[in-house]
Image 1 (spheres, rainbow, N blue to C red):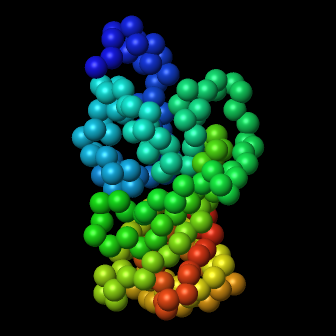
Image 2 (tube, helix red, strand yellow):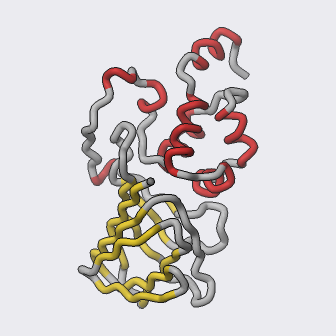
Image 3 (cartoon, one colour):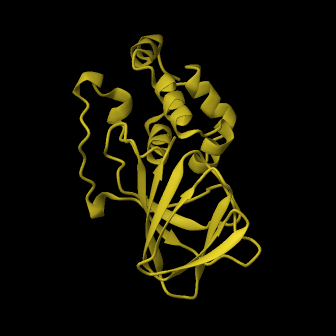
Length: 196
């Protein structure tokens, strides 16, 4: 438990409000953010309402989902610029859908160091999931995938599409979609999402 003095100092950063703004900009519900972070919707709600000050590891989980650094929550708003370099050795590979039984891909954020990014970009390492168990999801905005290696089965709008290395696809992400690696070859793609 933190002291009243620390609580007062930390509340000046409006961390909860910033988390809520990020979630709203991406069109995510609390439950969906919980799926991506492994945190409960109840805990996230308390954070957003300022009833709970998150620990740094908890805040980092949230930051990784939105591709922002911790400085987003603590930095001087007046000194924010649209420039960031993410070094290969600094990226962390995380599973998509932490609470799902079937994880369709692992991802590495390519823009987590950018402050308030207008897009989400990540490197996706697609997994082979059983046919019929391809997890479907949707989110606000559009999505673009450039497949760098392997073969990928994309389910979108009730149809199945096969992508080969070098292919790309652009689609409305508000429509249910899901992915599945085909074969044993490593299947990696660059994914860019743009919220509306």
